[in-house]
Amino acid sequence: MKSKFLPFLLLLAVLPVLIFRDYTPSNELRYLSIVDEALRNGDIFTFTNHGIQYADKPPLYFWILMLGKWLLGNHAMWFASLFSFIPALVIMLVMDRWVEREVSVANRLSAQLMLMSCGLFLGLAVVLRMDMLMCMFIVLALRTFYQMLKGQGSKNWNQFLFPFYIFMAVFSKGPVGILVPLVSTFIFLLITGRVKTFGRYWGWKTFAVLLLGCFIWFGGVCWEEGGLTYLHDLLFRQTVGRAVNAFDHSAPFYYYFISVWYSLAPWALFLVGIIIAGACRRLIRSDMERFFMVIILTTLLMLSCFSGKLAVYLAPTFPFFVYLAVLLLSHFRWNQWLALTLLLPAVVFVAGLPALIVLGRMPGTEFLGQKLFYVAGGILTVSGGTALYFLYRKKSLNKTINVLAL
Image 1 (cartoon, helix red, strand yellow):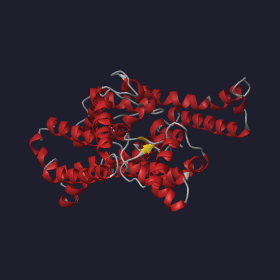
Image 2: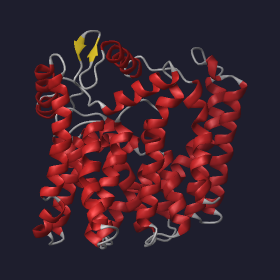
Image 3: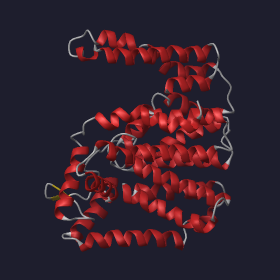
Image 4: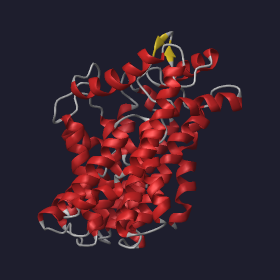
């Protein structure tokens, strides 16, 4: 399969979800209600939820939902979902272009398939949340920084795009949009002996673009009714408050060290195993490999220090887990421990149809005993069996990954 057809294949795979699924009551319906209130009240920068100020999120995603209703006359799941799915594709394509000189075509295809089939990444690609939009801008900002570091592309254009992407990340979800690029680039420059060049990337031009964007945003907030109170809530309660003493989603420091395993499923053992083995063997040598490793570790540790935690907050690291592992994969040949990391998901897939048959006959889960579920379970079982064939008879990691992902 050629990678250029992959975006269309992925769209075909998620199309039924984009069209037929219903809105979730906890977040998605709340967002639609907020958008409806904003349209009725003529609000642009400040939002309310049943008349109560809602400063939890920046305006960008709400503007997208408002645009959808204005264009289509009502809320459409397929339209809103595109602004999670398209950013996921952009992330995949940007990461693929980033490593194209370092990674073989076969490994790049496997990386794309692994990224788009990571459990939580795939979930975020179809739900109505701001996270994937923010992740896209963070990846674009980090990619632009790397281009500036290596002297690639237009210098003047990159000096504008770098802060623009960072501001758009903040404008999508909040301060994590600037903290991830700021901390990861500083630590990377520090450990590679380039810290004196920090001002080249985070100079007056960068802060001028960021401050101009914030000035327009905060000025728009203050212009609307109740803006000063809203701005105080936005800047302090929703940022400092969530970081230091979260009123919601509070979790212990080690939370992400547990959640990462199911967030990256079914590839967690494979990805983390290769990265740890590569680090232990001192294989992380190139600037690209070091940068990806720094992004993962700094983001993981920084978010762990914040009081409020959710598994989805770690999403900016998912592309770098996948692509750092793929960068290191060329140093490894087929061996028993690598095979074991792929054996486990393959066995789970093989058990798909038998498990559905058993569950379909049990009280409380009889709804699983439908023909379409059995067809899906059969596909899983065949895929798992085929993956085991490629894994142990052909000893091909790439084909095993591709079969499991598809």
